[in-house]
Length: 343
Image (cartoon, rainbow, N blue to C red; front, side, top):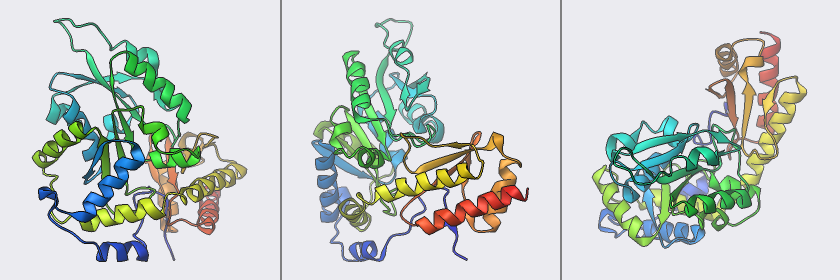
């Protein structure tokens, strides 16, 4: 039986067409900046983000970390949403490797609360650190896959910049937000200093992210990437997959959103409490506190029948992606409801 894997959009397999693009890629040594496939990907990514340059990274975590290291110095404060991916899932790299101090802010509707952000914008004083940067996340993973609308996002960024803050955007799933609101990626990226864009989630590439920003910041990022062991040699084999994804897999993200909405509807119709609204994208969250059995028990029961999803706090997360069809969604909902009925 085919497994229906809803744990994450990172589990996708390269299509045959993407595999052909990987196989036929012209490559060189990227540490010497001689890989033509990497150059093509970086040029395409920078253009889509409206930035001077971009650099290919092994992962989104690496891209986020190096964005901070390239723009801040030891002792600087970095404002992070308390539910952000950078704070919760990236092993504290900004503090361990950069000596940067995380300043936490509560979050609402996918953005840090303004009063929490601006209280860290303190005047220079010998007694305490002051904030250098604020990090934003769109779409917001722990926020339910919420896509902040472009006008709301831009208004927040303009206020942060008026307080002298640099802005880094963890845009691991920013493609989903842009497709949802039918706007160019630049609608979000032009108002930030740097943005990390993941290629291995909804776009279906096997590996990699892009860090986009000014030419000066990207050159510093290149030095940091080498320092932390991220200099990959014939990386064009991976970059070719990213280029294929950007050219072929963007518009189909609407299918993932449609499938997620269908899953939410089916589960709600079955009596479950579900987190999915007009701002959601390709993630559906089941409230584990309202289930008739434990979250661990339901996860185990469904996994035995080939339906996989993951836990996140008080919720169970189901993520649609390019390897999940409408038929898969209907089958997954049937399994979940059946197992709950038998719990």
